Amino acid sequence: MCRGCKRFAHEVVGWNGFEDSQRALVWQRLGLLLRESVGACIAIDDEASLHAAAASCDLTPAADAAIELVAFDVLRQHLARDENPLIAELGLAPVDERAAPCRAAEATQRIDGEFHKRSLAHYERSYRVLAR
Image 1 (cartoon, rainbow, N blue to C red):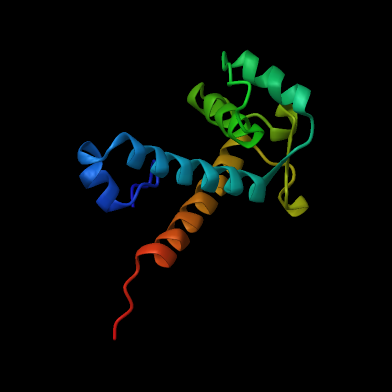
Image 2 (image 1 turned 90 degrees about the horizontal axis):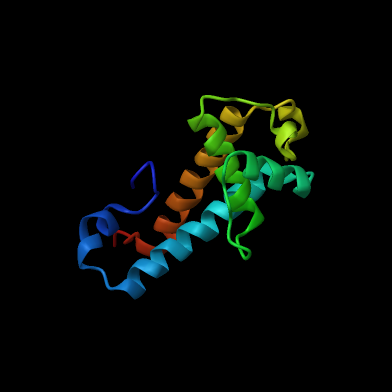
Protein backbone atom coordinates (compact mmCIF):
# COMPACT_ATOMS: atom_id res chain seq x y z
CA MET A 1 0.00 0.00 0.00
CA CYS A 2 1.17 3.51 -0.76
CA ARG A 3 1.83 5.23 2.58
CA GLY A 4 0.78 8.58 1.09
CA CYS A 5 -2.47 8.01 -0.79
CA LYS A 6 -3.32 4.56 0.66
CA ARG A 7 -3.98 2.99 -2.74
CA PHE A 8 -3.12 -0.69 -2.88
CA ALA A 9 -0.06 -1.83 -4.82
CA HIS A 10 -2.15 -3.36 -7.60
CA GLU A 11 -4.04 -0.06 -7.94
CA VAL A 12 -0.85 1.98 -8.16
CA VAL A 13 0.67 -0.39 -10.73
CA GLY A 14 -2.47 -0.60 -12.88
CA TRP A 15 -3.64 3.01 -12.42
CA ASN A 16 -2.90 4.17 -15.98
CA GLY A 17 -4.96 1.29 -17.35
CA PHE A 18 -7.97 1.92 -15.11
CA GLU A 19 -11.21 3.24 -16.56
CA ASP A 20 -12.46 6.54 -15.13
CA SER A 21 -15.20 4.62 -13.30
CA GLN A 22 -12.60 2.35 -11.64
CA ARG A 23 -10.55 5.34 -10.52
CA ALA A 24 -13.69 7.01 -9.15
CA LEU A 25 -14.45 3.91 -7.06
CA VAL A 26 -10.94 3.94 -5.60
CA TRP A 27 -11.16 7.65 -4.73
CA GLN A 28 -14.64 7.10 -3.26
CA ARG A 29 -13.32 4.31 -0.99
CA LEU A 30 -10.33 6.41 0.08
CA GLY A 31 -12.53 9.44 0.79
CA LEU A 32 -14.85 7.38 2.97
CA LEU A 33 -11.99 5.78 4.88
CA LEU A 34 -10.34 9.16 5.42
CA ARG A 35 -13.60 10.74 6.66
CA GLU A 36 -14.06 7.83 9.08
CA SER A 37 -10.44 8.14 10.23
CA VAL A 38 -10.77 11.87 10.89
CA GLY A 39 -13.99 11.27 12.82
CA ALA A 40 -12.30 8.59 14.93
CA CYS A 41 -9.50 10.97 15.92
CA ILE A 42 -10.90 14.50 16.08
CA ALA A 43 -14.24 16.19 16.62
CA ILE A 44 -15.45 19.42 15.07
CA ASP A 45 -15.94 21.68 18.08
CA ASP A 46 -16.60 24.96 16.28
CA GLU A 47 -17.51 24.78 12.60
CA ALA A 48 -17.27 28.56 12.15
CA SER A 49 -13.69 28.56 13.49
CA LEU A 50 -12.82 25.66 11.22
CA HIS A 51 -14.17 27.50 8.16
CA ALA A 52 -12.25 30.63 9.22
CA ALA A 53 -9.08 28.53 9.51
CA ALA A 54 -9.75 27.11 6.03
CA ALA A 55 -10.13 30.63 4.65
CA SER A 56 -6.89 31.73 6.34
CA CYS A 57 -5.15 28.86 4.51
CA ASP A 58 -6.72 29.96 1.21
CA LEU A 59 -8.78 26.76 1.10
CA THR A 60 -12.15 27.01 -0.60
CA PRO A 61 -13.85 23.66 -0.05
CA ALA A 62 -16.75 22.69 -2.27
CA ALA A 63 -20.18 23.36 -0.80
CA ASP A 64 -20.79 19.61 -0.49
CA ALA A 65 -17.34 18.80 0.94
CA ALA A 66 -17.44 16.60 4.02
CA ILE A 67 -16.51 18.66 7.08
CA GLU A 68 -14.04 15.96 8.15
CA LEU A 69 -12.13 16.39 4.90
CA VAL A 70 -12.10 20.16 5.36
CA ALA A 71 -10.63 19.63 8.84
CA PHE A 72 -7.94 17.31 7.48
CA ASP A 73 -7.03 19.77 4.72
CA VAL A 74 -6.76 22.58 7.26
CA LEU A 75 -4.43 20.51 9.44
CA ARG A 76 -2.24 19.60 6.46
CA GLN A 77 -2.10 23.19 5.21
CA HIS A 78 -0.86 24.41 8.60
CA LEU A 79 1.86 21.78 8.57
CA ALA A 80 2.80 22.65 4.98
CA ARG A 81 3.29 26.23 6.19
CA ASP A 82 5.49 24.89 8.99
CA GLU A 83 2.89 25.86 11.59
CA ASN A 84 1.78 23.55 14.39
CA PRO A 85 -1.13 25.23 16.20
CA LEU A 86 -3.21 23.68 18.90
CA ILE A 87 -6.16 22.08 17.14
CA ALA A 88 -8.54 23.90 19.48
CA GLU A 89 -7.47 27.11 17.69
CA LEU A 90 -8.86 25.56 14.50
CA GLY A 91 -12.24 24.63 15.96
CA LEU A 92 -11.22 21.01 16.55
CA ALA A 93 -10.85 18.76 19.56
CA PRO A 94 -9.31 15.32 20.06
CA VAL A 95 -11.90 12.55 20.40
CA ASP A 96 -9.81 11.03 23.17
CA GLU A 97 -9.83 13.66 25.92
CA ARG A 98 -6.61 12.21 27.29
CA ALA A 99 -4.90 13.50 24.12
CA ALA A 100 -5.70 17.15 24.90
CA PRO A 101 -4.07 19.57 24.33
CA CYS A 102 -3.25 18.36 20.86
CA ARG A 103 -1.31 20.06 18.08
CA ALA A 104 -1.90 19.83 14.32
CA ALA A 105 1.11 17.55 13.72
CA GLU A 106 0.01 15.07 16.36
CA ALA A 107 -3.59 15.05 15.12
CA THR A 108 -2.46 14.54 11.53
CA GLN A 109 -0.23 11.63 12.56
CA ARG A 110 -3.08 9.98 14.45
CA ILE A 111 -5.44 10.41 11.51
CA ASP A 112 -2.85 9.01 9.10
CA GLY A 113 -2.28 6.01 11.37
CA GLU A 114 -6.01 5.36 11.63
CA PHE A 115 -6.39 5.76 7.85
CA HIS A 116 -3.58 3.26 7.28
CA LYS A 117 -5.13 0.79 9.73
CA ARG A 118 -8.57 1.06 8.10
CA SER A 119 -7.11 0.71 4.60
CA LEU A 120 -5.26 -2.45 5.62
CA ALA A 121 -8.44 -3.86 7.15
CA HIS A 122 -10.32 -3.12 3.92
CA TYR A 123 -7.63 -4.91 1.94
CA GLU A 124 -7.76 -7.92 4.25
CA ARG A 125 -11.56 -8.13 3.92
CA SER A 126 -11.64 -7.58 0.17
CA TYR A 127 -8.53 -9.12 -1.36
CA ARG A 128 -6.92 -11.59 0.99
CA VAL A 129 -6.97 -15.14 -0.28
CA LEU A 130 -7.10 -17.65 2.53
CA ALA A 131 -4.75 -20.64 2.36
CA ARG A 132 -6.52 -23.95 2.00
